[in-house]
Length: 296
Image (cartoon, rainbow, N blue to C red; front, side):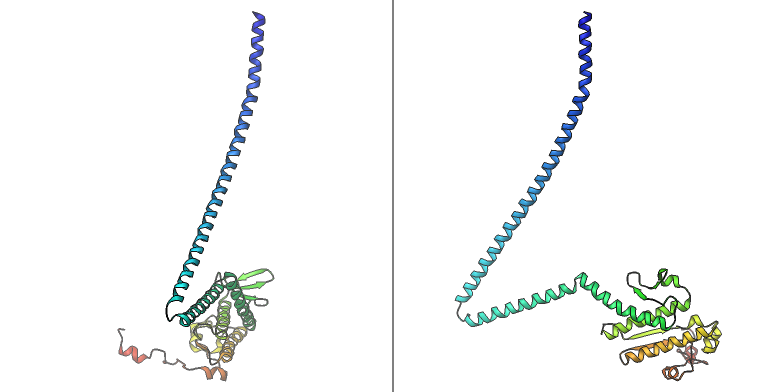
């Protein structure tokens, strides 16, 4: 009995030893089966796609053959009608010419809508605009204009390339620079629009472009350039108006620039451009109108 009991214990130990290996083998087989099932599903999906594609090709081929058959029957029927010989051929040629012209128009419109072509046209326009902006900014000696000044159409701001990187208008600072860069951007844009006959009004109205250069309301009201804070500011104001003067003369008579400002430069070319000098009680809205309608 002890011998039999010892044999039974040995057999039980063997069972415990073999069971983990059997379970691991079963798990590996189950994983392989799952992988094969995934591959089969992928193959079935590909076969279904090929079947659908073949069905579409068959339908398209059948439709094309049906259209060709119908076109042939129409041509045969029209050719048998009385009085349709030359007139039919002429009408057919005219229709084919119209169809070709319409197709050419479609191709031209599609080419204009091409994103790459549109980007190329935009880059070409910005190249001209940025060149003029840089030249105008350097003429006015604006800050960070030593290298390239350009327009960022995505963020609708002005950028200046410097040794330290790209500087946006917001970081350049000072009212003088902000006014100057807005001025050069407007002038460069309008010059491009005018020279390339773009559908943009040929007019620009500017108000108080010299406001940052005057120290007080009294100085602004007088319009005396001698009351500007420094010689540098006085030169900048003079340069701004001289730039606007040359700009309009270069584009004359295709552009009008209207400036409403307190400045009153003594230069003859400036005085020749003045149309209204509202001072000493004279204003855009006459005092007599205000007296006649006090409640308005």
